Image 1 (cartoon, rainbow, N blue to C red):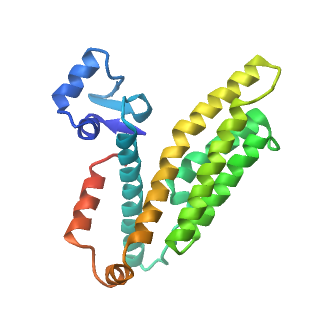
Image 2 (cartoon, rainbow, N blue to C red):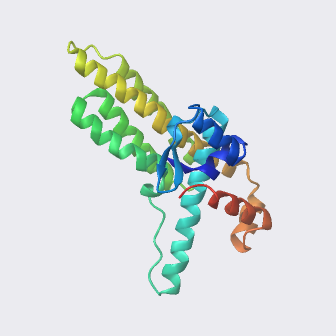
Length: 223
């Protein structure tokens, strides 16, 4: 995920000046796009909690953008677009990895099949109605991804080049997918623990000031 200097400063609880100092001293990796600094989230020395915050906010931005798009379609008299599995960041990241596994390992390899199963479970979770169902499917997707990583790493391929390719893919799958899937599990758990009365009230009434502030904060992170 690409981040701006202000995004990184907010995420790491530092001032923009401190972030610039870390860049000039070589402690943070960044590159220039025009006159602005840009960062890759994978290059940042973030704690697991900071990475989870980053993923949560990215999902919140996607959800907020989807709602804005729905309002625009309604205003134009167009039919409402239903929420899709392709709106899930975990699925957006997982599908290209699945196709990469097909190219490197083949469509019938155990790792490829397990990652396909993870994508199927993400789709099931996306379209499940109850929070417990969502959590069950998303947790299954996380287990399938973990098994994919194990299959890739424990390869008995005699070719050292292919073994390295599989280990590199294992690293990519692990670093790319587990965070977004864990974020989906946390969202499902919040839905489970939200009182039924609050759900009904939220459906009838517009968002509260607190939720509006959360959406505003989410918009401050990259789109």
